Length: 224
Image 1: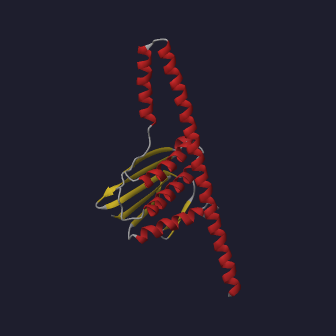
Image 2: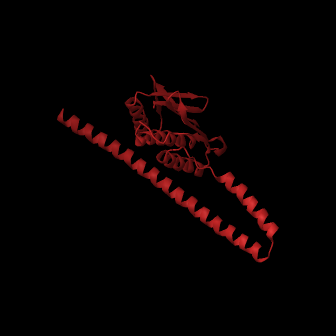
Image 3: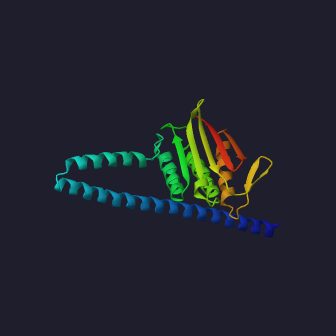
């Protein structure tokens, strides 16, 4: 019995270490992607300044005005930053969405979150982060980028915080009882699902998962 407990403990430690390493790798990828995006913005900003200076030196005011109008439209188009009303949730959402887009995943997101919550912000971020991580992983199993999509919707519904994440799914998903399992070799996905379920149960919330015709959907409701 002592040997069994020792070996079982070693196995759990190994799985936890694997899960933590996966989280570190994801965080690194997200930070790297944000830095790459910021460098792109800096490069574009420098080019825009040089172009506007050139128009001024040539006294082409009408051309400069037209350039500014076009730039204003372009900035409106690329301004896809999600502003939920909660700073911590904004950070996790924008980080995950930016990572998804860097992988050529079409993302449609709308989110509203109260500034003050009875739910711990870290718990809410764990839920959103894990749901989006799983959605990104599922989308990347599709070879054609045009088939990849993630839809995120967060809002207040009947005094509860409603979270919905839908994504295209190219992998095999099997259901045992009421629990979904994947065929992927890594155990990190399973740990993520367990963490989400535990937090939902902690707040006496509700979670529902559905898989139909290549689309996987998760709904979470947390009392406010």
